[in-house]
Length: 134
Image: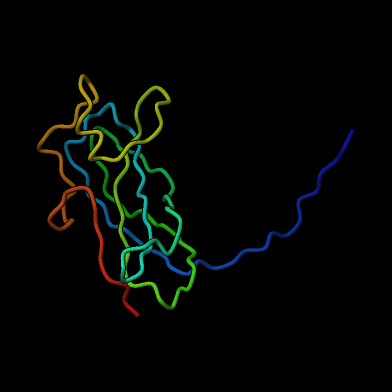
């Protein structure tokens, strides 16, 4: 029988940590999980990082209030100018995750109520973006 011992893991701090405050209301109750996906961008809008997800969080009875944290490593961190994030929601029955915007196109019990919004996010109800503050 083979044995495996766990040893210390090399942990490296992320170049950027984005904390996204969330207040979700009127999400269809069948959608029970969410997560936030973010990307770091250069001035010309080219990607400075991979797309990175927060840990999933529970959406209970169509509501969630809390903060999603996304840690991102980049290429040429000093040249990163901005970020963009979007809400993703879990599709029941192991259907994976889709953007909140794409979930609006679903029909039946997973259909998004047009009144559903991310309270406190500017302009567009399911995304947030802005400059990198140094």
